[in-house]
Structure formats: structure tokens, C-alpha cells
Image (cartoon, rainbow, N blue to C red; front, side, top):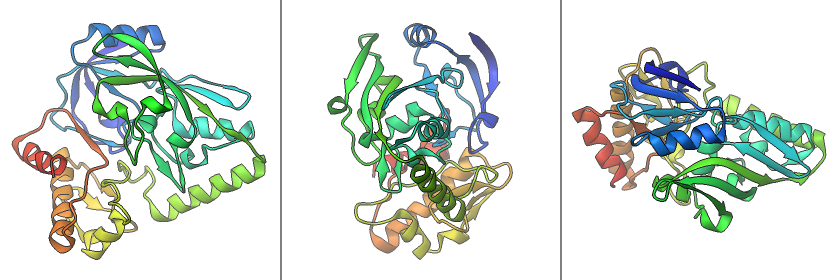
Length: 299
């Protein structure tokens, strides 16, 4: 198993932002993964790092990266995937096997563990629609448990995993047999939508910044307050969708946090709506970041 000290996380994140991790581990098997979870003190597990802001000041906690824990298999209408398997690769394999249900994942830059944890979704589909069960590591008992869908407490962009007591190891999904051409057509439409509305990873970003309020759109509200013109340091709101922030150069986690605070304040002041972050901040916070995130997370 690979283990690195003073490991730079910057190029592993879709935002291309992040400092140094004191220790980083790359497990390749369930046994290695679980052993790390049992023996390391307060480890942080990271997958595709597509919906996180990694502190420019680095991370003291040991980091477990699931990049090499990425196998998946297809058996009839079922797919079982390890936490580090990338969503688009699994989605494409499902299409090749004439299985429908994962078309929404075709453009996601994230891994299965994160996609399940946040009940990710798009285009009228979400992960809870196809979820059957997951093997998870329970931090309290230091054992592996199997969660059925009723154990997951799925809701909009949420699951029980986000409470922090369990780590996704692998997940079983059930899909539906369908016409391959129809599946690929839906995937092409989804990719075209993302291409027109959302930045690709040539413009480093972390996906949607804020969750949609009930019966509304964060992007719509942010556009109405003029957020597409906002820029702080090297962090800029994307010109085609106001709920995305792009790193135009060497943006820092403070640049991103300050820009999120401005976006949040403008919507709150104009509409009385307190947007909730869809992204997570991980690592050491400076005083400015701590003040901002305390407000964003506790509104």
C-alpha cells in the first residue's frame, strides 16, 4: 500500500486548490482500507474530491485516498462498486451492458463513495433510486455493517453517511434492462446540458456550490443578485451558471470562502433566503475561514 508524507493534495482535487497532508494513504483492498480506519487516529477519507474545498493551509489528520480502491462488477441487473470507483466509468459500463439508471452520473467527476454519501442526482434521477445496500465501516464499533436503503436516511443531497459515523466501503445497485441506444442518447443529452450550462474541469471547480432551496433554484437566485459578476482574488463565479465558482489561477481556500460568503449574503439580503453549502471545507481553517463557515453551516 502506498503511503506518502507531506503529500500535496492540490492536483488531486477538481478545484485544483489545497495544501499539504502530513500523511496520505492509498489502500487497494477492503482489508487495507478497514485496517487504516481501525488504526489511524481520526482519518479523513477522500475520493474524487469533486465537491470539497481543501484548505490551502493543509490537513493535519491522516488522509485515506480511495483512488486505487476502485473496482466494480456487473452481475445481471446488479452493479457492485467499491467506494473509489469513478461515477462516469461505472455509468458507461452500465450503458454498455444495456442497464439504465446511472445516466445521470455520466458527467460527474466524483467517486461512488461521495456520490452515495450526498445522494447525488441530476436530470430527474438520484442515487437513492437505484441503491440496494452498502457495506459501511462503523467508527464507533470498528466493525463492518450492511446498510439497506431504509438505514441510509436518504433525502435531498443527504444521507446518514454525512453524519460522519460511517464510511462507505462498497455499494450494490439495481438497474433496469433497457435499449442501449436510448441509454446512450440520454447520456449524450445529459453531457450536452452540462457542457452548455456548467464548467468542465478545464475550468477547475467543485460543482454546485449551494444546495437548491425548497421549490427554488440557487442558481436562479444568485443570477438575480448579479452573482455572475462576482470575483474575489482568483475565484470567480462562472459566467454561464451562477451557482458555480471557478479557480481562474491560483485561488486559495480563503478566496473561495470569501466569495461564497458574498454570494450567501446577497441572496439573504435580497430574498431572505439562507443558502446552504453543497460543498464541504476540509482541513485547517484560518480565522477568516472559520468565521465564514461557522455562519454558512449554522444558519
